[in-house]
Length: 149
Image (cartoon, rainbow, N blue to C red; front, top):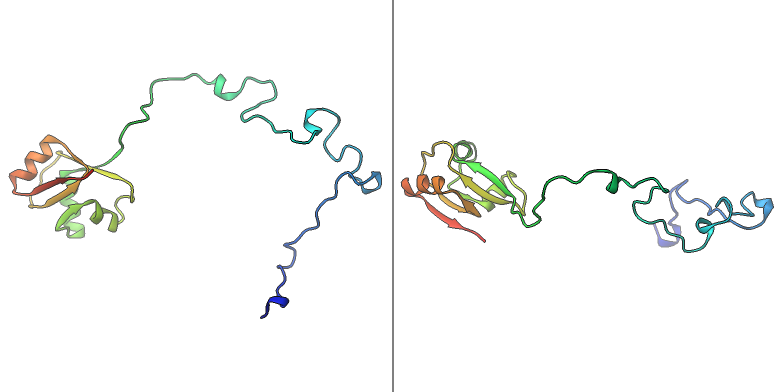
């Protein structure tokens, strides 16, 4: 195969429609743009969300509640879940990196530990946030906690 032998795949290249090249072409006159007006002119661009005079959807639907744009979303793990994960994956350290390596979280997820359930094994934790109850349970077993930023 050489550069001068290369051709596009069969049927992948189409001839361009030549608009406005006389009545005989079938695409003359208004060049398939309908009649006169703003939409037939050069540079016309419809406004985003325009619905042709009908009340747009963003004005029809009522607004409810409040959404905090600065909220921090965490992937939550309870102590009972951590005990199961230790048995399944054999964690020696419960960290964001270990969870990512085992496809339990995404790369940008933040992890928070909650105190629901019981923890039986001593572990070191490297997480983004932890509740007071979970912190007391982990330190009671002799584990260490490192809070990541």
